[in-house]
Length: 198
Image (cartoon, rainbow, N blue to C red; front, side, top):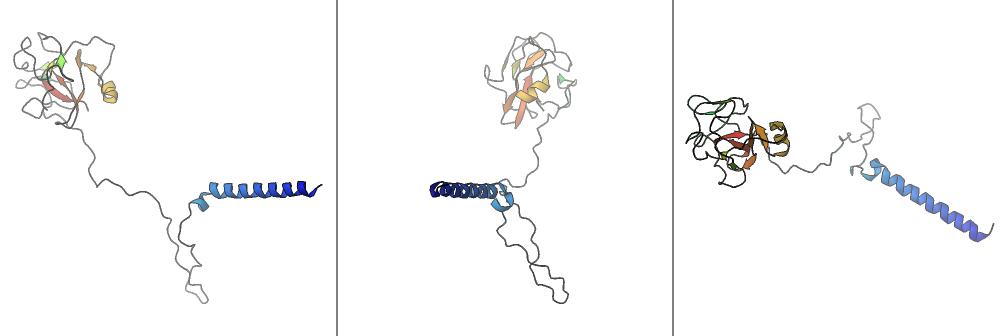
């Protein structure tokens, strides 16, 4: 074997050893992310000849500090009227309550704007409605939020809308979820009443 060949083998072996050593250092989390504090010395048990080592430090976590001050969890707003009655007309089959203008409802969307319902006057109350009609009756001018259109698509209920905020069928009519900054949450207008989406 020539000296050049043996030199190549030595250099190659050294390169492999160095490569493996660096890989081992990189893959070993105990070395790569070691705590900068020195390891604890022997524990002093107080007996004769006992060493006076430092107490063991608990492991340190390296999490970034929170940028949020402590605050309560967000609770979606609820309507202040539980269901339609002889005094205030509205649906009777919702679990989140509803609001009307002057009693907690947000300002309605602008006519022909996003969230405005542009259906024809229905001429009668929708299913599960109790109490008086919107101002102007069932054939009059549109109530706040506009007249809802009859639903004509495939079955799609509130559970779908709570996931993607898209239009859905409620009591055989179309409703359009919209985020209202004044109210602080998502909801929809249904024949003049505001119903939270959650």
